[in-house]
Length: 236
Image 1 (tube, rainbow, N blue to C red):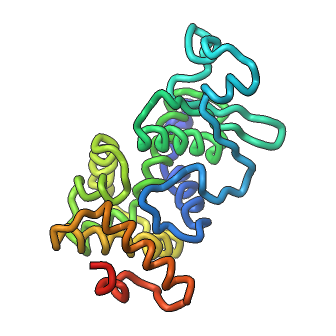
Image 2 (cartoon, rainbow, N blue to C red; image 1 turned 135 degrees about the horizontal axis):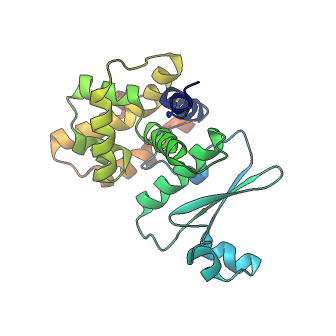
C-alpha cells in the first residue's frame, strides 16, 4: 500500500468546504470579509490570545514563547461542543489577522486532527478559496480583464496572498462553475462592478464603496434595488 499517496492534500475537498461556507452567507457585499461575522453551522468563538490569557489567568509567556507554545499566528482550542479560534493581536495588519482566523476555520471545517504539512496545505487552500473564490476570479478576468493588483484591492488581501492565488488560479485547467459558485459570484458581482467603475473613472474605491453602501442599504430596505447598475447614477 502506498501511504505516501494518501497523505497528499485533498484540494478539491478544501475548495468545496470553503465554497459551502460562502454559500451559507446572506450577503457578500462587504468591504472586507470579516471572518468573525460569518454565519457558521457550528459554534465558533474568536478571541485574541492576549485577551484569552487575561480572561483565564494564564501567563502569556506560556502561550507565546518557549518550545511548548500554542501560538505562532493563530490556533484553535477545541471544546466539547465549541471551538475557540485565537489570533495574535500584535499582528497589526487587519488583513493578516483575518487570514489567520480563516486558516483556523479551514482546520475546523476540514476536521483536521494533526498539524502537519498536508493539513497546512489544505488550510491554505481553503483560505484562498474563501477570500478569492475560483469562479469569481474567472469572471473578473473574463468580464473585466482584471489583474492581480485588482484582486488584492477587491478582496482586501495582501499583495503576496493575491499573487499566490493568482499563480495557483492560472495553473488550473478547469474552473468549477456550479450553482453555488455562480450564486457566490452574484453576491460579489456588485462590489466588483463598483470597483472597476471607480478605476475607470478615477474615483477612490474605498471612499465610494462606503458612500454607495449607505445608499444601497437605504434602497435595499425599501426593496427598490437589486444590482449596481441600477444605482450607478446615484453615488457619483
